[in-house]
Length: 240
Image (cartoon, rainbow, N blue to C red; front, side):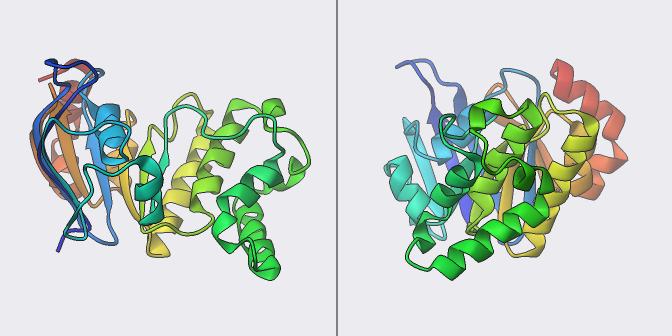
């Protein structure tokens, strides 16, 4: 059984205008599934719909066989689904450590457990340890992205939705972020990843979908995309 199934979903922000048009895809347990496509294809809208910020006008979204398309984001979060949006997903007036403690809220009554969770986050992103007493407003763009990712990963969610993990990051910082995504998969976290870095998405994903106009235009295992990488990059950036 797929961990996540999007079953012929149509959704949008304005009544009568669908950004997602009859889109269907599956995310298998323990995998990294990549979503690529040109700007305006509906990629970010897809994640917002899965996480409950938008509700489908038609179709179903299933998590472990259970329909979740009518649930609010907080209820979806309780199912073990976390979401890292393209922008910052942190509380700017709180310190780095306070942000991570909020991420570890589920373990708040276990002081040793919280300490262990924070230590793992700091071991993964040593820069956050150096900044742990600073307010999030003082972080650079790369540091804020690290914190956004670490805050959602501290409890090892069942499914992590990630929108453009390397957007605006220096190559060295982006490399650290991708390494952590792969490490999370090794710990058993399933990932659904949207990325404009087509080469990197193909490199780390097990299975990929290319969407355009709110529909799946191409899908297949990593090897299928790697064999046609130049054409796929062209289609993803410019539209087929």
